[in-house]
Image (cartoon, rainbow, N blue to C red; front, side, top):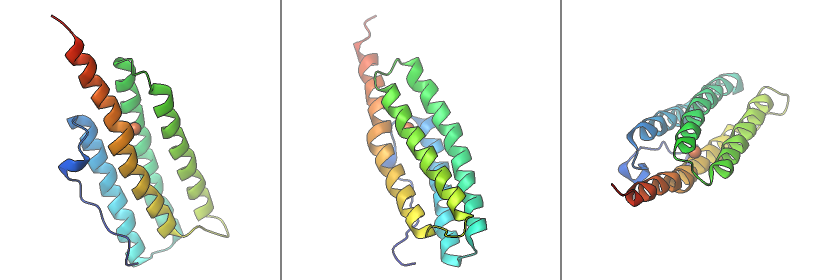
Length: 141
Ligand SMILES: [Fe+2]
């Protein structure tokens, strides 16, 4: 399974918010569990179990982010929430299919997850934090 690499959280993935960064680190940890799992190829049921752990933690994390964006009256909240919803739906379908008669290749799922999280963190998540810093710097005392 050569091209699946574990990912290491580095400052480059920081959005500049320690609480959110902690969540992202945890999600990358679970991602790495999935990569590790595929290397040992224990079967789809076990894979589905780790994937649903990831989904559970994603839901907790998304809720935290959405509340945070609400607090700052983030203008792109609806768009961001939609992106979270798309992810949850896609992963839920993967999970159901994994237990079906024609399961998807776990490698493809891992590729999807790696791409999604990295681009979501670097683009969408950074955007709300940048916005927050912007509005804060506008505040006059
Ligand atoms: Fe997000």
